[in-house]
Amino acid sequence: MEEAVSAADANRRFSLLLRGVREGRSYVVTSHGKPVARLIPAGDRDAGATSARESLLSRLQGQKGVSAPRWTRDELYDDDR
Image: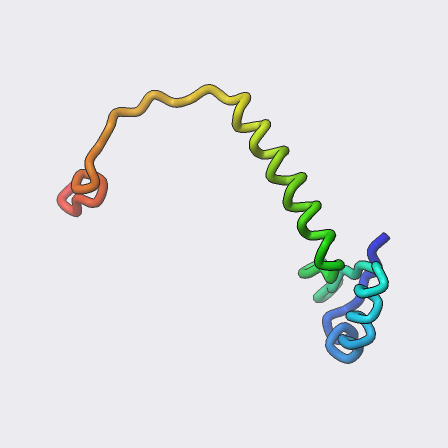
């Protein structure tokens, strides 16, 4: 479970929060009551990124391709159109 901490409090207690992260705790930093950042152990990010990547790739593989005409680089960046 992530503990919410205000940005001002996180600023004041940053080294203490880092110690907590090293021990496996996670924090959500809030600004005016809205989440803006997460402090999580570095290894956790890799697991989350891998899961998100796998989810995206499986979703993309299920979609049909689009038939589009080929174009040249010059046509793509032509300013006269």
